[in-house]
Length: 428
Ligand code: SDX
Image (cartoon, rainbow, N blue to C red; front, top):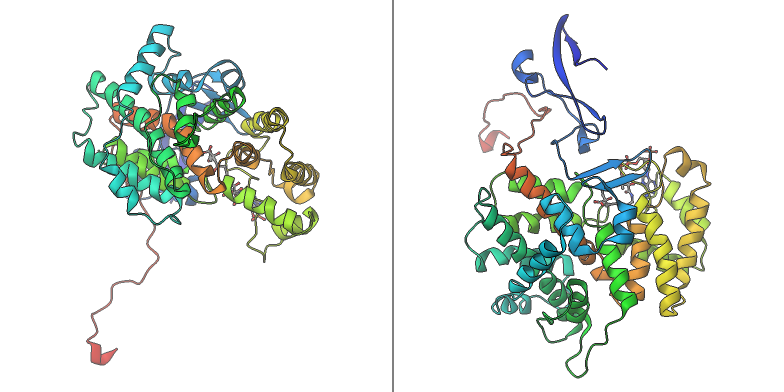
């Protein structure tokens, strides 16, 4: 592999260094491009070919369907670790010792009370408000109740801020769901584990003791691990670019929640369930919906299918598909949309349109089926995605600030009007 790339413009050659990552990914370092070429830049809508940063957190290989957090395979982590261990790994770079994990858990519990005044904010929302809009607002409001923005150069302050958001975010998630259900807002039980406490806060009723279910705890723990990070996806890139202006961590994460809300991104898990329900209501005619998905005149897309990076099976989808079968069987739930999903997937995987475009089920295709079997309302599915992605957003924001990356400010190619003289209104 040569060490440089050569670009020739108007007969003049310019050499740029090649960067090679630890997994042999190669990038052209164009940091000097404008300067050496007298103003030439690049353009790449959607950044399909453009790397925004060097990162040591998550590695994806889209052609081979590989996903690793800090070098550990997602299959191993989903099977052998728990969510808090994985959160620690993503944020601090190593799997925690038992002492480190116990301390992390205890420190998070220390910070898992949310200022009661935040209830006034949530009360101002109509019940019909989409939970992602509520969650984004409440997360940004955390800044008002924790005004000191973190000194990123202080390890201790950074650690405390991480524990604060890891402790308070699940409360906001639970309150968002309880608000919709008209249930009183609670604080959970700090004698419980991290995921047990999330379930307690989401589902406990004021007039009865909440019975923990090992099936639900294990299912949710695995789903949170599978959603924890995914390198420079839309919402993570949003968190990084907002943070690059030295905006605080809570406000940066609030912007990431808004980006994740979109149906092309995290909002797809809700859109998949709505699509599967529509197919069921329509008599289960999957072929009709496949034709709509392939019709360029029809804006309908097969939600939960396709991915910017994976041109092979999303490894998370494979794990979630197996888990969906197990959880529904364990819960004794018969959900016809799971069979519709499987039928749709097998048809698409043998259909030339999807095969040619390398469109496979992604993380969102089966996850909603598990969430629904757990009693989570469909509008809360993307909130659950955000709950899982929280440690990834924290880790990526922390890495960007630690590397002292410059403020993100892309260039453009102007295609508007050339200079023209002002015209008085009577002459227009
Ligand atoms: C997530 O980036 C991440 O890592 C995200 C994520 C994470 O963990 O953070 O993995 C989570 O967001 C998963 C993706 C969830 N979104 C969906 O399931 C929505 C449906 N899928 C798409 O809209 C689409 O596949 C995207 C947005 C996921 C990817 O879009 P790209 O990479 O911009 O690809 P594209 O839109 O250019 O599509 C290429 C071709 C086009 O056809 P042609 O113009 O070549 O004829 O494939 C077609 C598209 O029309 N296509 C689809 C399709 N997805 C792509 N056709 C029908 N149904 C689909 N789902």
